[in-house]
Length: 128
Figure 1 (cartoon, rainbow, N blue to C red):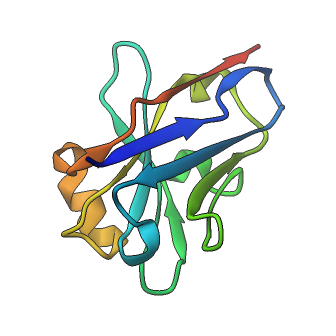
Figure 2 (tube, rainbow, N blue to C red):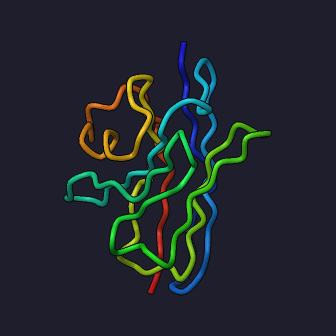
C-alpha cells in the first residue's frame, strides 16, 4: 500500500517561514516528478511547485516564485517545500502528490487532480 505523508504545517505570522516535508512508503520518489499543491477554503486546488525526476530542477507557480523552494533529499527520500516571506493568502491545506506514470513536471501539471498518489495534507495558516 502506498502512503504519502506531509508534515510541518502550522500557524505562522506574515513574513515568517515554514518547511513542509513529504515522505512516501510503498513508493519511491526517486524516479518520478513530485508536486506540491494547495487548497484554500472555497477555492480550487492549485499546483504550487514541482520537482522533476531527471534533473531535480523545480518550477513554481507565479505567486510563490522567489519565496518558496522545493528540494529532494535523496538520502532521506524526502521532498521539502521551504516557504519564506509567507503571506495570509498562502493559507491553505498543502498536499504532496506523485504518480508512477509521470516523470516530468509538465506531465504532472497536466495531470493535476488525477495524479495517483496524494497525501492527506498539512494545514498552513498565516496570520496578518
